Length: 156
Picture 1 (cartoon, helix red, strand yellow):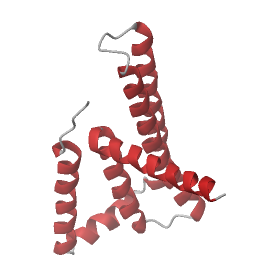
Picture 2 (tube, helix red, strand yellow):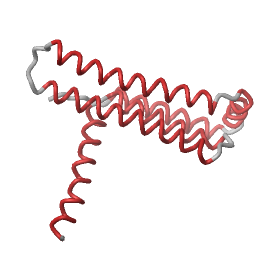
Picture 3 (cartoon, rainbow, N blue to C red):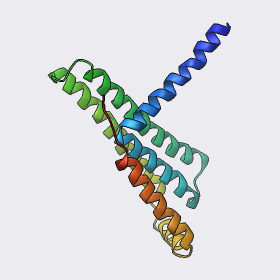
């Protein structure tokens, strides 16, 4: 039993290793993490029900899962060499298409749940009246940009 428990927890280290691999090497995963964090931070301005919050969390998680699966497919296909067969191209394109579909579904859910001009005004007024909050948002924007586009991605 102890051996089985050890194997069980070892599986978590593999999962975290895969997530770290994706974050280090895939710009789009970093972009979606930053976009998701921004949406979660801005959710405080909305009066969302618990199921609505769950939909947003599931959408964010779904997009990140799709990106990780896309990365897995790309890495697996790349094992077979640099020549891209029609089947390898189709596998990579389908995986990328899955990310696109999930991202579009998440965007539609976000628009349906969060598109509210009065809340947009409230967010604008909040930051307009709080210079330190505005500075914090600017620092976040720069840090997110550098995290997404500044990280060196070495594909080995």
